[in-house]
Length: 173
Image (tube, rainbow, N blue to C red; front, side):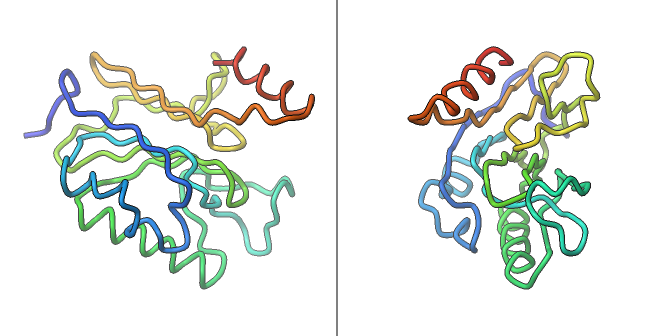
């Protein structure tokens, strides 16, 4: 029987590197084997979205923001390692990723947890819910009686440009 989302275990983790085959080595992610939470939100995934061959950051080419890049051997190995780790611990992932190894977020659901009835990847109101935030910073999952908003908030920085970016983010959220 699938667990409904009326009652569940939740854990939010920020990792600094879910990439470069480090995911399975991160002590923080021992939580997948010890606590076995039903839902895990990972901010700062730092894996690029799948794009067309030769795609470069901010080139305007379309990306599959819900899929890990396999653009080269290293990216393919990282994606395989992450996929294997999640399968071994019985999790499926919903990703929202940027063009490059920057930002990005993931929602992990343990096997047996009902998938969300809806997923949104932006907070633009009337916008297409499946259109991802450009930096993959938002996943809004909705079940029958629970809404989970996971965000990866931009750093305030130290210059006016980054302050302005953060103010715009705060207003949006």
